[in-house]
Length: 258
Image (tube, rainbow, N blue to C red; front, top):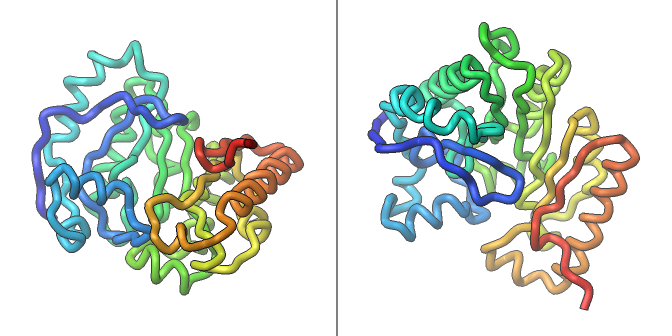
């Protein structure tokens, strides 16, 4: 895998449900076609030129050295560190990425820093038994469908939905807090599906984050977008309250009453 170096790694996020974050890889081989917000931003900034370039990830070779310098600087301000917003820490079929992610999580935990993690890959079983691994960590998967044909079209190189859920359930059974990001949830003109079936498949988790699909021409062609997301957001809230699951509805998902 190609490598790059960076001058900094930790940064404070502006995302509504995050604290400090890091992205130790540039690009992502999952090649999501919703389209991918991270890819669009990196392309706009000139960091990557093409979709093909984005799908050839480059690992940050000095990530651990940067953490050694930055942890003492930010430690008193950090509530937790999120992995990741512009890449995937357990990128499917990318063992070098996973290996570095494990080392980063270990280093943060050894400095008494909690991690939250999100992936469209799956979590290695040994993650739960690693020395220094904190049970305060929270592990999540992105899950917007159970339909594999949909996944192959919109998340072509990611792990299967079944494997994601299975690996998350393993961590849950080992005592870790687990969560699901249902974002970007597709409109019915992209796929007709039952949200309740997806919610039931992850009813063991501690938290669900739900958000609408943005930046998609196909999504904007759906006539009843406002009503659709308002209805689904209420369904998520009802389901979570019934099952004693924490929830967060992303800003902009529910339309304000006029």
